[in-house]
Amino acid sequence: MAVELRMLQMDQTMTKGKIGKWLVKEGDTVTEGQPLLEIETDKVVHEQESPADGVIAQILPEEGSDVPVNALLAVIAAPGEEVERVEADVIDVPPQTDQSEKTTAKPSITTKTQPSSTIPSNIKVSPTAKELAEKLNIDLTQVKASGPGGRILESDINRFIETRGETSTGTERLKASPLARRLAKEFGLDITTIDGSGPEGRIVRDDVLQVADEIPAQVLRTEPAASEVIELSGIRKIIAERMSMSVQTNASVTLHTEVDATNLVVLRGQLNEIVQEQEINITYTDLIIKIVATALREHPNINATLTDEGIHLLANINIGVAVALEDGLVVPVVRNVDKIGLGEISVQVKSLAEKARNNQLTPGELQDGTFTLTNLGNYGVDAFTPIINPPESAILGVGRILKKPIVHNDEIVIRHMLTLSLTFDHRIIDGAPAAQFLQTVSQYIQNPYLLLV
Image 1 (spheres, rainbow, N blue to C red):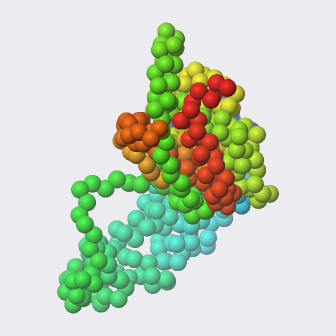
Image 2 (spheres, rainbow, N blue to C red):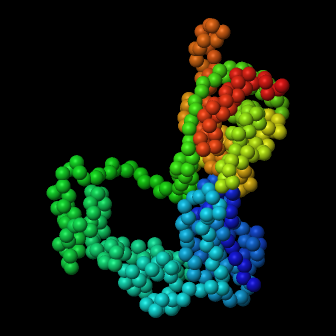
């Protein structure tokens, strides 16, 4: 009996994933637990495994497609079993925090789209490609398919139009050479307003240049030449979407404060002398993680999230630690930080960071964070405005520790100073409680020995 492979939800905020790479092809024999494809989310590249033994009867979304959670990815049949092919289109779902509003695609493996009377029955075509072809009166027998199993996708229709040098405008077709269309785009001109002088009214290069010459130079839109174009795709694209969602949906406010971290520097040195035989190296990040966890226990209203039911004060304190990668960043989570020792925190942070850099993090190590810490001190940054990691309500940015002359005990002395930047969601947390939490964190940094009390 055929088995469906569907897009898994790898964390509570995930609404879609991107098909990074198929590791198998149709007709391949697979075993249960065998990796079938790579899925890119905003946090990690994950291999999805086969749920059963069998043969890949059909692969639906192509590489690079955005696919919603629970959408059908592939059909796995028993050896010799015949399965009707499924006609399912890829649906691009915008990120949402409300899980009840997610759009998912659930085609049955027994359903099959009936071909239109204007499309030959032997041609496989996605619903959106079919609609576009009918709208433009395109003969699908002339279109080269790139989808799985010879399926024509919407991108194939657009590529066919590009090759013919035509642009869709409603139910009509505007004839223009590729060069003319490119020049019109560079000059910021609406190509539909340009009269064509080529055969059958086709718009050519000179037509565009003539219109451009008649427009004052300051009106024309020009773009600076790029030395390199980096495609916004994969993890980078999803991070961009998630950060945009955070800024658009949160009422973000950032507070900055400068703290005397001299005693923290001294304590770190003393601790590392004690634990050096255990091959443990306590970092400032480790110490601040412990300080933040202690402060969150004293200020539970900061350790919260907003849902349709209201503000949820979270029982566990799970701190995400931002780790920079070449193509983005991920935020692995240290769980129950207030209940474990500093040495264990240090070991876990280093282990998670190493896994992140080697792309070995599991979905579970990226889930259930309640607060995030991001440290840019190693990059020489003094202060910055961190962006909240949804669905959390706050994030703490840590700058570099810098020696400065300050007034201490009525004397000008050199002390180690540190700037903290707390961004919080004003829908959940008011300014005064946020400032009180930041004040508590500052007090523990100034007097870290209080952690021992």
